[in-house]
Structure formats: structure tokens, C-alpha cells
Image (tube, rainbow, N blue to C red; front, side, top):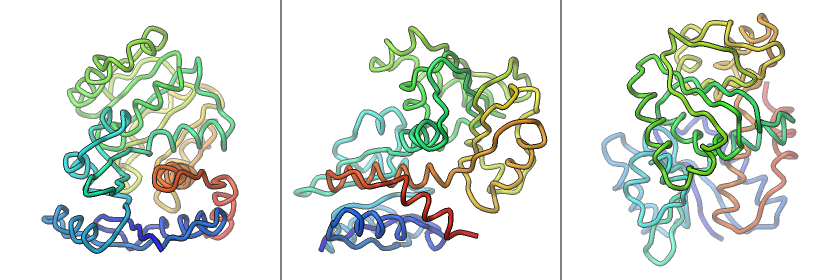
Length: 279
């Protein structure tokens, strides 16, 4: 039986073992998935112990995604764009890295929420690791305009510049306007707003003014459960459609499962089951 895990700090709250156990059951894959807590100062050592112990792969969560990318021998294009990895696979002493966060987000919005991103105006709030992980796949969905807004404008400018200069995105950027803006000076309104800041997790204020919402806009928070309630209530109060990040969690896990096993699991079914099971 092949062994996989979620590696991070903290990991106790993670729903990944539940999700991957159900994926394995539904696809007939012989695998086991557990949680592994890594000391904040020794991610490489913990990873090496997992590999030496026979682990076939792992998911990586905060705060180690950038470190995981740097330790990899090879990386997919989307991991290279993000410069971060949330999925590692071990094969013959080699570490292969992927970042499935962005495609998980896009799949949840387009497949599960039924909102096409092509030709739409998108606002991505934040310019940290969460935003870096999803910007490339969002661009691949061919929106008309994608604005990255951050409280520290320089971070948004740097993130946009890195993507704008990447050879793999040049054709996409001929049809998509990619901009960086200051959160405090945002202009225009948007069809889809994605909160990739830590505001929900920290219980902070909504990071943007309601004027950015088009009528019936999709307001998406990458958090799920209780931390996402504040953003959802704000969205409803201003005529938007709220959605939390539980679907993103399941869909990014499905992409990781495919990366490891070569089989795509029934993610929509597992998402439905998980929503019913959670309070």
C-alpha cells in the first residue's frame, strides 16, 4: 500500500486525509493518507524522513509551499509560475513538484459553481503565496481583465510583472488585461472577486469596498467553514453570490490525486458528501 500525507504546520485541522481516503475508495486505489506535522525550522528534515520511510508523495500546506518548491528536482509549469508547490511526488530519488491550488480554484468556480471566467472581469485580493498559486490558472481561463490588488502595492506589482514576463503566458495576455492596483484605490467593478488574503483567517475586516461588486457578482473566499462566514455575509448584504473555498480544497486534492495516481477521482461527489458532513 502506497503512503501519502499532508505535511505542514499546523495540520491537525486538515480535511485532506478524509478527502483522499474517499478518493481512494471510489477509484479502487491502494493507498493510505495521514497527517505529518513538521517543525517550523526543519521542513527539509521532516520531508527527508518521510521519503526515507517509503512515502510516495505528499501535499504541502502553510508555511512550507515555497520551501517545497525550492527542494524539488523538477516542477510543473504551474508550480514554476507560482514559485511554490503544494504537491510533491517521489520517484527513484527524484522530487517532482506541482501546484494544484489554482486549477482547483478554477475548476470549483467553473464546474461546481457554474460560473465561466472567460471574458469576465476578475479581481484577485492579495499578492502572497495564495494569490501566487492561483494567478496563472486564472489567466489560463481567459478572463477579459484580471486585477491583482494588495494592501502593499509593490507586492502586487511584482507578482503581475513576473507573470506578464513569463513566455508561457504571452499568448494569453494578448487577450487578457493584467493589472496591479492598490487595495485602497481600486477602480471599476468586477464579475468575480477572489479573496486570497488572510483577512478571513485572522478575523480581520473585509479587505475591499463593496463598490467593486457588480450586481450578482461571485464573491469567493479561499477559506471555508466559520472563517469564511464574515466574507459571505458581506457579499450577501451587497447583492453578491458568496462561495467558500471548500470546493477548491476538494478540487486541488483531485488534481494532486491525478498527479500521484494517474486517475481522476469523482471530485463533485466527494464535495457534495463533505458539505453534508460538515456543520
